[in-house]
Length: 225
Image (tube, rainbow, N blue to C red; front, top):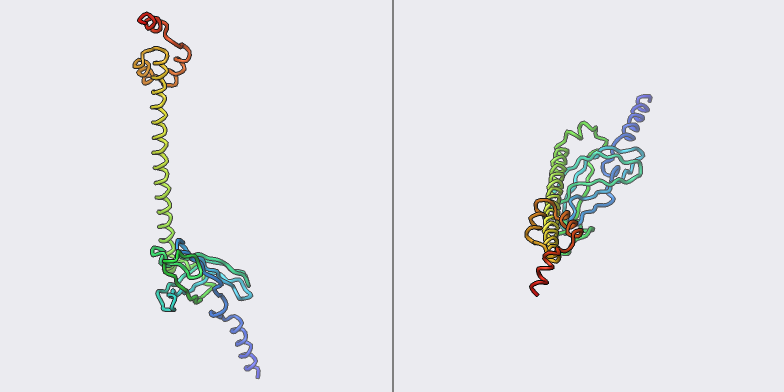
């Protein structure tokens, strides 16, 4: 009789700690628009204990239910009892502008559905970090970082070109202004432009404002009238 009670107690203990992979963690929602680089998965912890580190299988289906592809994912995550947590995974067929059928599409791009299957949870960090999926994510993040870096470099280069063109335009405008001021004050235009090149057009503008018209040139012009 004692053996039966002991076996029954052991069975209850094992049952209490056993994982129910069909219900312990379930997918609440999935989002992936046609322009998204990542899909967003909402997972709910249906147990009374905190769940960490999940491994799950995503099966991609067309709108008729035919299987297109599948992928296994390993995620470092912490989900409190009864709570929902959102995680990101690489978007399915992003280069071909696929979108989840409940998310935004442009009316022409193909839609898909998914099936979520929990494979394991509370996996030790060491096992999770050593998986091939972790290497995949590392490569994915490196690629995205390189792309963002290239975009930043291109934007910086374009900005520098714009600044250079503006600087050249302002400089040419100052030289033109010196020439016009010299002409209106009856002074040698070529001479003052050369002085602007040797010194500074701003300095020549200030000097022309101070000295004003050339009296000798004005008298000569009046003598010819």
